[in-house]
Length: 324
Image (tube, rainbow, N blue to C red; front, side):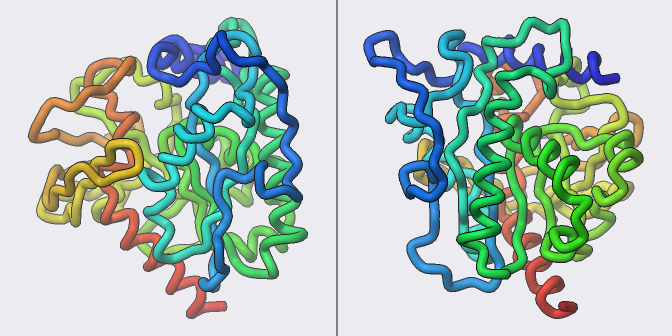
């Protein structure tokens, strides 16, 4: 099962290689080790902490160069690319939570060979350990006792899955977790079995739970992020069994860099495929899936359901605060 997961991740790397930023042959490569006591090692921190709940956000894969094997967080182009994701993804949570987002030396998608477990790769571990140190620093120096949300996408979700496996047996952390939005990668039945503190969301307002889904068309095949036994919940109606038509879609929001390019209410409906756990949708237009297989809408996991996600974050935060 582990090797199967690794091969799926290797497929992601090959598929996305040409769509991620490179560090540039003209610049000196210096491995900037994050020091999370310094603001330069954070992609984003709130100028003012004025909400009762925090967000700890980990950005997806943005780096594809073979050498060095991990993203240089001092690279300006990569930092800018990551910063745009605060608007395109993390802003879903911004009305409800104070955003904290560390820079981390994520694994390049060019450095996997497909023959071993990705989670044991020293390149993945380097990025994971950065995030783990950032999370520890956040808890000790920035959190101030507030409850928090975990959120990511793609490799960011992968890192947070590992963080939950390793750290969230701690009941104090479990009690502070509002929810974990681990979107764009698979949390599986095996995860829930092996790590009983990892609990799947079953509705719109349960707390301390994991929300996860992977969006694709009914005809899509070979999604590299949809693993066997994947759990999924529908972000339109928060059901695992009932379909939702497009009238329930409060608004798809498409970004160009850090600006909203267009917003379309009632854009598309969706349902969870009981056989695979995929979030199945039929879109009213053809979207560019990049290097993913046709119909695998990984790039749009946030955009297609943006306003519903935003509303749900607020709902879970209100529920958490009302019951604690």
